[in-house]
Structures are given as structure tokens and as C-alpha cells.
View 1 (cartoon, rainbow, N blue to C red):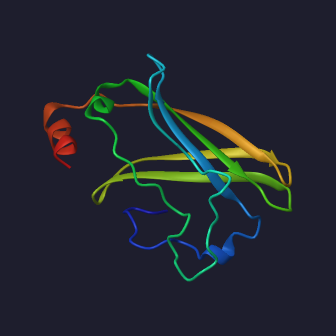
View 2 (cartoon, helix red, strand yellow; view 1 turned 180 degrees about the vertical axis):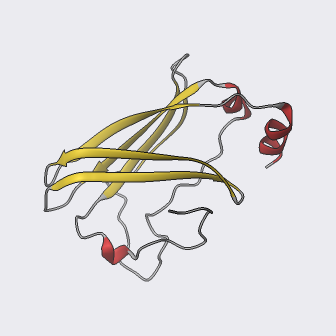
Length: 140
């Protein structure tokens, strides 16, 4: 179990034997329904098959400071699956702030069809923050 953020990826791109490709990521306020972030890969985007280990493997985003005032948010991911079906596909998400472990989430999809596009939303309940962590997070 990871206890701190890693500087490298945990597996090489070649380990993606199912051809999973994440194509969209959206975050919304579950109370107001306001979309805070929405990025999708266009059909013209292609992942280069080169030695760049970061190519197609991360998203850089800046959330507005009001995110810290929310009680919950919904995170929607969309991904496609290649030429093989997947049973019990589990995504593990670990949240860190610097080297401080905050929380872990496990999302399991029982079955994904081959050559399919799949969407799931996870609702995150956000903790109340005291002024000091709020100030530190806004500063960073």
C-alpha cells in the first residue's frame, strides 16, 4: 500500500495489455451542478508510441479556490477498452498533499466489454477544513 506520492509511474505503458485509454475527466459540484473542470481527448488526438513515459498518462489541472468550500463533488471518467473484455476492473486513487496521505478510493467495475467506451462517476464527500489547511492549499 502506498504511503506517499511517487515520482515515477508504478508500471510501464507496455503493461496496458487491455488497451485502456482514458478519454475524458469531468469534475462538478454535486449541489449546484456547476462543472469545475472538463477535459476530453478529441478523436484526432493520438498517443505517440515513443519513449515518453508521460505521454497520455496524466492530466494537469487547476481547480478554483471555491472547491475547498464544497461539501461533495462528482468526478466522472470516461475510458475505452481495446480488443479484450475486462472482468473486475479496479481503479485505485490515492490522494496526497505533498507527502501527507489524505484518502484512498477503490472503484471496481464488474465487467467492461471489448471495444467499448465506459463512463462512471464517483461522488467524493469533502471534509470541512480549518483555516490553516485552507490557506496552505490556496497558497499552493
